[in-house]
Image 1: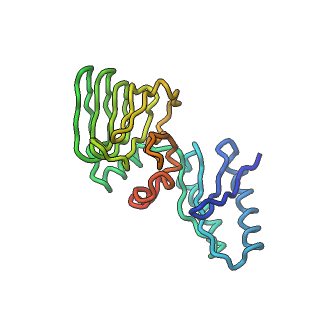
Image 2: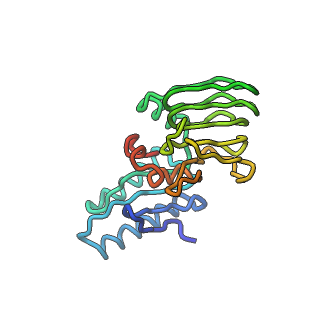
Image 3: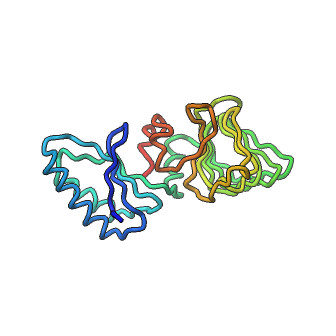
Length: 221
């Protein structure tokens, strides 16, 4: 199995680092791959997104990757993204977007309504409901109903562990989560696709899911 794979996308190129491989192996293969790209395309300017899957690189590892690319002026890193959202990233999103932070416990029969984006750190019990006009970032526990884009905005999304929710709604689209068997993970992204159907992806796919928002926050690092 390759530790590093190069993929072409409609937005350019992706370098995917296999999360199961050691970082040492990934760097060794990345070194060879960059040398090959330089040999085969010595004058071609290439922009590459580096995808690390469920692996979150530390600062030293990210610096090592940037040092490799510094040897090739025509090979440029668009960003390094993972499928993991951290508390630090959530804080950065909050600061850049003026997100409402909610620690509320929403109990059965209660509905908590907000205008704008929400970073949710509380608990929604079964039968409880969180509704907002903006996007929702979930770092708490959801066992009830959660709705972004109320009442009818389908360009919003919900990020976080959604597998225990009763129902997910974005605008007027909704899903009964039990029917979808969503895996528990803070990397989930719920959104409405081009067919106006509620769909699911990963944090690392946010650039494709919502390019405008991805660019606005500078990418999920």
